[in-house]
Amino acid sequence: MKKLMVAGCSFSAVSKTLPGTSWSEVLAKKLGWDLVNLARQGCSNGGIRLQIEEIRRQKPDFAIVSGTFWDRMEIPATAAPYDWTQKSGGWNPPLERHLQDRTKKNGYNRKDGINNVNYGNNNYNMICETIFSLAENYDHPYRSGLISKQAQTGIRHWIDSIYDTNWKKQMDEWIITEGVLQMFHDGLNFLVLPNLLWPFDPNNQQQWRDVFPKIIPDQYILINGHESPQGICGNNPFTGEDPGYHSNPHGQELIAENWYQRVTEGFGLT
Image 1 (cartoon, one colour):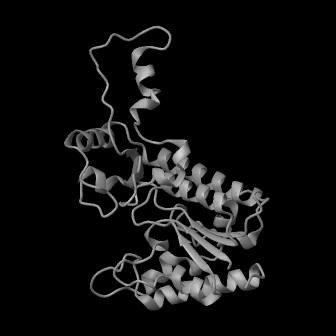
Image 2 (image 1 turned 30 degrees about the horizontal axis):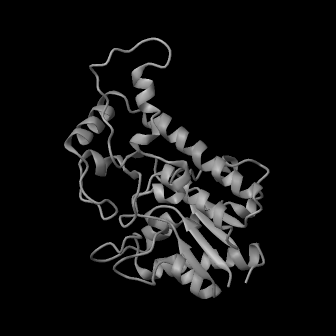
Image 3 (image 1 turned 180 degrees about the vertical axis):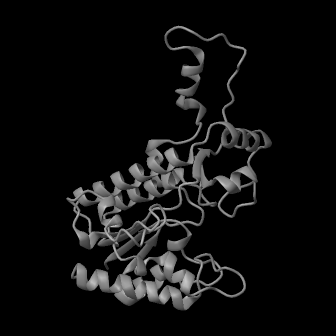
């Protein structure tokens, strides 16, 4: 059976409270394909890039990929504090050796691939979340517990003194754009949704096309702002508790129908 894979944040994720109603599930059922949805509420663009790498590894028949808002970050799931009483200086100082010591298991490990990302039920290496949820230390369904008070304080100091939101956006754009380019070079069929990382400018209809290298044909890129999941969700609001994907089920059906037309007509897949 053919396979559909999805990468992104909450706008692409399934719902825990309304199973089977997200656009990816509706689309997979309409196509008669298997679904592997890697998207996760609150995920960062670094986490989504790891989702893209998993798509590249599995090589599905079609993939739908969306970046997310840039005020999100990745931190190690477990800390490895440094002994600041050590004297530094010279070539390969103690701090450098500490940071490069992989035996400390401090964060990302290339070999672990998608399992670096916190999905809550896996032995994750990193916490990929919004800066807000970490700075306020909210309970999170994809974390095994609260972060330490020391980590929370460090994040708040980083926001106050060091964080550059414009530079973070630029870095996230490079992270997602390069991943999408690699998918194209792999020969994968996919649709990339730029709408969250690159907010739509109605005065620049070519904006989303211009984000990605010209070598990638138009059919691989969502260019029409009216088809963006964010916009459709806004026009089809949920009532009561948010299902997690930010719309009512009808909005998800509309999104699924848009992507069904892309898959079957744009790429000739059934």
